[in-house]
Image 1 (tube, rainbow, N blue to C red):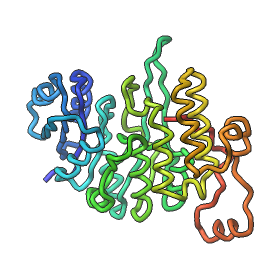
Image 2: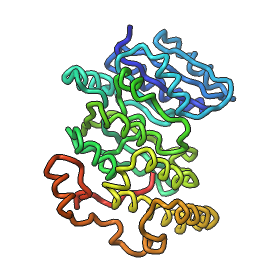
Image 3: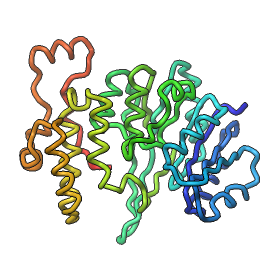
Image 4: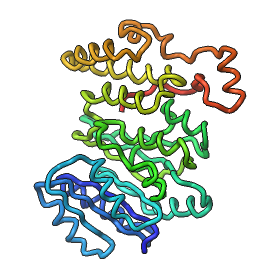
Length: 320
């Protein structure tokens, strides 16, 4: 039985997928299985995966495209490893990724979720932009959960390593969410499982033009869905939520996507969830600042419950 399962959902883009697979096979830790879940590819993606001829590779084929989260859930179901790691097709592992993940879980048997760090590589017309995404190390408990809401943790799917029993317990990814599925999963895990972070850089994220995180048409509805599933986002961390929403509308306006802007403006106004009007959200920066603690909130903070205060060092979030 392998100790680690790597789940890789794929959909076309055979050359990129081959690079992702190669990065797994080059790991210094060899006791793993790689489950490639083909989500209805129409090119030679599956053939390229099979061409490696490595017995640790298992391919699951889905006849029609159902989305990456449904594909990941199939991989989780088939996983034999105690630890499940994820890899998106446009990302690559650094050679010691699995070795370091296994060491972290071995050192802390109660650990259920580890969020590691990575290098982001974005190709632009003026060249490649490289930026390290280092998470604050050692966050646990309510500090971990607050940092997730406040965008102080970069929790891209490839950064997540999770015990299978914990994934099964929370039901895996939610395919009904069109975006922010990784945020939803991490928040569900943080409710009752041991989660932490590391600043070790263990993989590289490569920018993809067709990544779902670039589809801003889905962002507002996904944020509303997250508020429905996790009410403490709006109740305890409103400044962080409103920063995200203002960034979203600003992005649309800057790029002249007025059709989506108008549609989302109507959806924002009709949702009934948000306190500031859209006009105030866009032009009054006070709505994205931490509020002062009142006596009730101070009691909650003193008792160890999450407060409404975001750390002043937290930079404004960019919309993912």
